[in-house]
Amino acid sequence: MKRRLLLAAVIPVLAACTVSVVGPKQVLIPDGETVAVTLAYGATREGELLAVTDTELILNEQGRLVAVGLPTLHKVLVVRYENTVDGEWKEKLSLYCRYPQGLAEEQWHQLLTRAGQVDFVRPASPFPAPPRVGPVPSVNPNEPWTGKWRVTQGQFPGVYALKQNGNTVISTNNSDHIVDAKVYGAMIWGKLGTKGVDFKATIADDFLSFKGEVDSGYSVEGQKIESADLKPEATALKVNPAELWTGKWKVSSGRNPGIWSLTQNGDTVISTSDSDFKLEAKVYGAMIRGKWSTKGGLDRDFQATIAEDGHSFNGVADYAAFGVYFTATKIE
Image 1 (cartoon, rainbow, N blue to C red):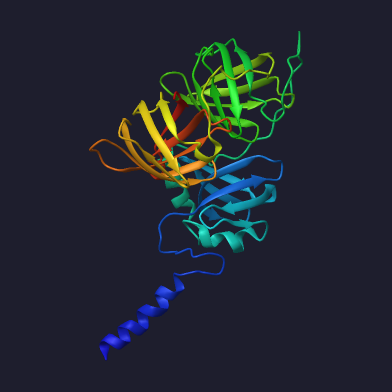
Image 2 (spheres, rainbow, N blue to C red; image 1 turned 180 degrees about the horizontal axis):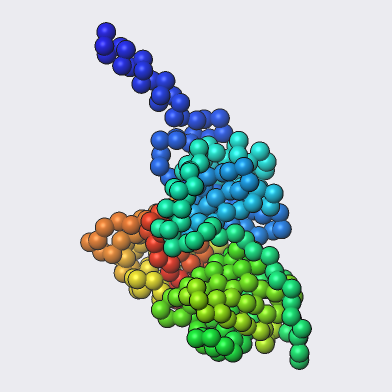
């Protein structure tokens, strides 16, 4: 009799934890779903869905906590279930959140502190352009950060040669400083220099200058000095669109540089015997997500997103624990 009473009490609780209205999301699963967010002005975001409040959608985007205003949303794709949501955001997306009921203010503060943030990253708007003296370089509004920029003050003066690919901005080989950043509206936020200090900058509304700060204390300003028509570095590498991840990749940043030798078969990517690291991942559009390890080491979570030309990718290891970023270039 006691056993029947216990089962009668447990079954309704378990039933309440399972939601199948839109997809087979289990609330008992601790992670939020990976979502691809398209904003009303065309920009895109991708990350783990943490919560949806009355005013914002909150993501863990490769270790950054990002808050996107609901009025700026165009559509949200839940990657695992290929389910697209284009309205009624809180009602339809809460099913896929890590925290479907939200968190208290103090709990959000604790998560922000763990991520090294004071507040959420919110996509920025351009600032009014200052007067321009001299020649005006051309601008590609689809990749406004692409080009050469002269910085004349602060700890990192010099020429920043940058290439924007979607939501990623990285430095090219002829840059005086290494830059690896993500785009948040008119702002980029990432790492600068060989030591990877924090760097964020906001572009002007004419896309010809930027203002920012380095290491949360030093201001930096840059002016575009060369056209956005930077040519990609010459390469003889061929890319098979059906197997974008197949080949050898040189990881030159992060804590574990080395060679990833990969083969793609459909929606699965695995390492080969001559790879410096063991890897197994699933393909989600331009992103792969799975496990990697040094040979004989522990498996760790990672995710990476490939560039449109198939010649490079950016990723983050241990992303659930606010891990480290890395970049890679195809070499074979």
